Length: 152
Image: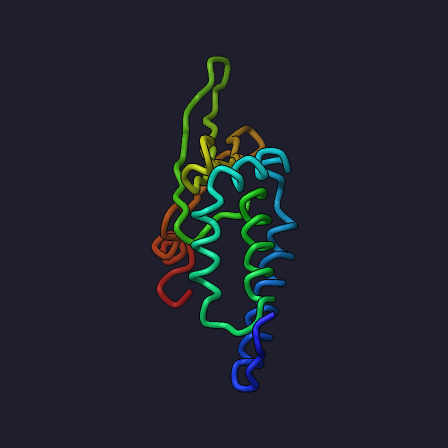
């Protein structure tokens, strides 16, 4: 273990607390890839993963930062936990036997190994019980302004 400096100890504790919260919230998400898939990805991309974690944790004198970063990376990769750089797309239309449309919203975070990381976020079926729907995609501020007014 590297020597601990008094000056960076509070920062390390804050960072580890933040990583613990991110791990906790990621574990609440649905499983995207099982342990065998994540193990294969970690084995295949070992040097890239090590380089990213080393780059992230190199300024800290405590090995706990790298260990927590590894734990967060493994959890985030295996769950439907998407990065801030994820993208989304929407599919809308009618089925062969349907009179009302369905809207399905998807998120993707690109490829993880040889598999695309994608998840269906929301599905809305317009029906006799729900005769219409207004949803925002991408930026919701204009939809909120329309729905709530300028003073919203």
